[in-house]
Image: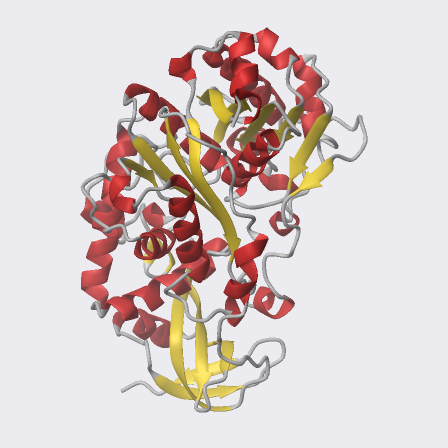
Length: 512
């Protein structure tokens, strides 16, 4: 392939804004800052910004319909506002729908656009300033500088499908802290672990992420914590969704921004970008799981990640053993374990599972964490020429997936990914249990969680099976004794009776 169509990443930047709310930046200001810094990182600076033919802004959390935020649409056209702040006007300006997979999906998409000759210089940029926004509101400060009603509605990219079905939303399953806990207990059953042993494993798993974050100067929470501290309930580490303590949950209330710049090799050389700034995308893939969680094959595997990993590895001509660095998407431990299992990575792999630090400790800036992960990976690979790094992005509930394999080693031959459409349908056609919204009769628990608020236990959520194998969702009685027993003994496979309710079904466990 000639250099005019070989995609390459040439610039990256990140920032973490811990200033007081009176001084801290808006999301648009953070995006403009990291955009300029990414252009400087590449070398050309303002000259590069002026040559962009596309700027894609990663969707803000407040603009997600599921957030219920009154700040939705506060900036009418986010990419337009960023371009205005940068005094540029690229021909393509787009904004993305919700999904933690989004940044890697965009890299994959625009690498193909560059390879096809449709683009030659692309900026991917995102930021969150939820901590500043909420702090200003709490202090009674205005948000006037945050509002921009100018411009037309932006062109959108990504999947706008709702996070969950209407029935799932009745049970709060559109909330990540609820649904990932369901996956976690199912994984414990798959591994055959006791409650105590699995809790200790979660602490060990995320202690390794925390140790990386503690050494990352950009981390929102750089505090080093022991495995026991992370996994054990305490006054400042309550349960959120059993078995997850607060320290095992992604933290979205941060002020962070990151940007990436991609060009063709020819455009990079034309602009004077040095070879040692260039990082190549050797393999990539994107895939969606069966969308609704209640329709999944099970709650401990991901055919989409498995397929995606094989496709990306085949494209790169590499195996998992050839990877030197990883950043596995880590909103919750179940996302890490499922991805590792499907990609063939040990949970305690000595290479480590993150270069960034993970969403609970580095910070979980909405849809934009993976932009930070890619930027971090770029710098790690620049410091280790010829090595390879793999990272993945995960949207909603192990639902939307994107993966990239990177190296400073140039790609040989033609850059061409396999179209995701060619393998997506087979994933969607997998066998899965029938589902009913109106269950009645004897049943058993497939997986479950006990949900907590600041004052303690609130409710238990069950995904179960009727005796004929039909799946359902229900809650248990919410008395203290029942909820405590749901946490003190293993309820996987526990029997009971379910009755149809309005609006919620009720499962009454038959405790021993």
